[in-house]
Structure formats: structure tokens, C-alpha cells
Image 1 (cartoon, rainbow, N blue to C red):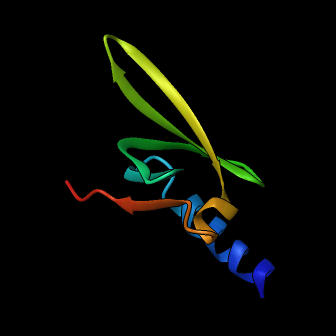
Image 2: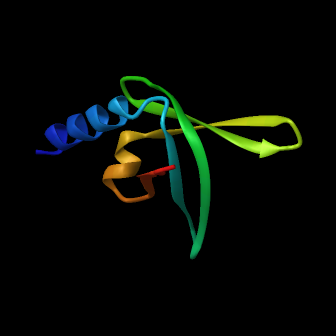
Image 3: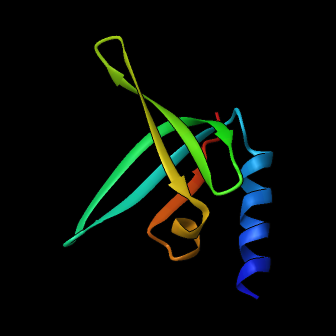
Length: 80
């Protein structure tokens, strides 16, 4: 069942490539960060999100699909 749900998560993320998302990441010890970015690409085991860090700099952050499964990262689509 775990492999099937990871495959579903991967398919959902791949269908959202190029769309703006809001990431809520659990950093441990009651620390969470909320950032907005665009899903740049999806690979077999990770996906990459581009975040505008300000001051003309771009930051790329990668997460694994198991982070979504274990609820370490929440990904929601931003409707503009």
C-alpha cells in the first residue's frame, strides 16, 4: 500500500509542475516555515520548488515524496 500511495503522490506532484504552491514544512521542535514557490521539476524520488528569496536571489528547495506521505511537508496549490 505504501508504494501505491507514493506513486499517487508522485503523480499529483508531476501534474502540478509549473504551478504556484504554498509549502508548510515542519522543522522539528515546534518550528514550522511557510513559503510560496513554483514547482520547477519532478524526479523519480524528489521534487524541486523554486522560492523567491528577495534581493534578486532565487532559492531551490528539494523534498522527497515520502516527506508528503509522513506529513513533514504540506503542499497546497495557490489559486490566483
